[in-house]
Length: 109
Picture (cartoon, rainbow, N blue to C red):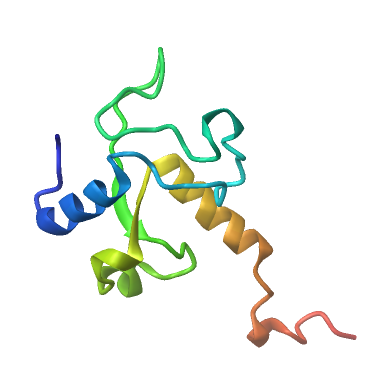
């Protein structure tokens, strides 16, 4: 199994807990209906006929956290994500987020 150069022990712990499979259950906006409501991507497998190899990552279970906050999390607060699901989950969270308070009166008349 391929693994990162840094924090390999943490990565192995997260991947073992996930069974080497992406743990997205729809946070990305896809229902994953054909695969028991969980993303079918597995680490080091291929993404399909024309896709390259899938490299899962250990990232925060909560996609709203910043990279700095996520870097300090213990293994039990991390999940295995495929890059597509993680990016889409972050995008979905940002899309549904409340507007920033500092811009509250910017367009008020």
